[in-house]
Length: 579
Image (tube, rainbow, N blue to C red; front, side, top):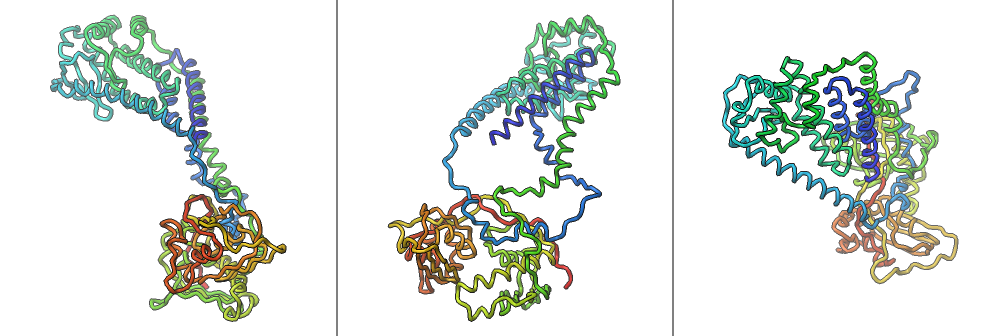
């Protein structure tokens, strides 16, 4: 965050310096040109280059030589087992709060608040003057009010401007001087000077710490008054009468308290009067200077946009997490030899059947449910995609190109997981081919379970006697030489309903035995939302949950927390193609 703000500040500083050099080059030309340059420098503080680059990435940039990628390309980047999503190395541990950024933010907030308070007090003074003013008859193109306050004549309001004239002003000026003063104020209206000044007031409030911002303010006031002076003199006003009128206003009336209220006495009064009396015509811009201004504008605002357009494909395709597995080769994904996807009937019910030989039958399932089955993830680990993904329901029937395993009914719990894995990989490929499914990984804060040591310490975790042979099954773990990281990875694969991170601090390898009821674990996984899942998962005679089993049998506990973890984001999904 701090580095991003620092980048924006120095980029805006460089832009302001460039605007100053251009203004110096245009010193003999019209003041309106220099005012525009300084205004661009002010607006740059509100417009980061990163925003322009981001806009550029949203624009299409097609190249004729680009070879279209197959539909499976994006899907295969994440076709590795979903257990990698919960790898402990990819979850950010809790950090102590950083005090220095908080102190800087507090300091900035105090300065911005003090600046806003000062503007508000001045605005109240100006508001009091126009609230007690009375309408004044005139043939001006904007409303005019007469005020008893001793403020100079000025244009109030940004979008609905009106002229506030102090009572007795006409008596202090000659008709020629009065007309010149009114012409000056109308120039402010035509130039939208109040809007420009209001924008820079916002810049001053946000970037009060930057000296260049205050320098730009002085230049804006100077050039806007000089631009109006040039316009009034160009309309045929007598320089001596005009200068005398300004001096008379300064003698009898007070300056406006707000910069965004355009008056007549702003900037260096002595230099203004000298310029008015000399009445030198500004030089017209030649072709070279016009081309220079156009090139500078194109470079300042067009270059970031073009950079975003050119780099859009690589920036869009860039993985948000740094530690993401390498894409699996296309040939490594197995496929179903025969597969059918049809809309579900009105009387269909949800059913998932991993049949003998690797056949798969799923009825009344949404695409969102199919993705969770294919990648063996919880609901928190899937986001994005069109709305119909969670409403339209389908029936899937698929047969692999070669038999996979035997009959799941005859398998031990540890064999069932090995049987499911190749079927899930085939389902991943089927979804990509028939639904045009494209997914990506991204690292975001999400609910997780932290595997920690329960009160009383670990139980029945014996030091490993051999290199290790861990058997993980549905409702059963027989571990010989298994690490806590392996246990957390297994629990993440559909056992706990969320990613699980090893935070036990136990770095060795252990022999242990763990048993639980898989159905109980799935039914109460949501109980962890309120705190420790182990505390929420009390038995009620229906079997031991994974949360209770961990605490009672191993002295471990799953605590609900929030941390950065990887999830799947649906980039694209289409209704299924014909069978």
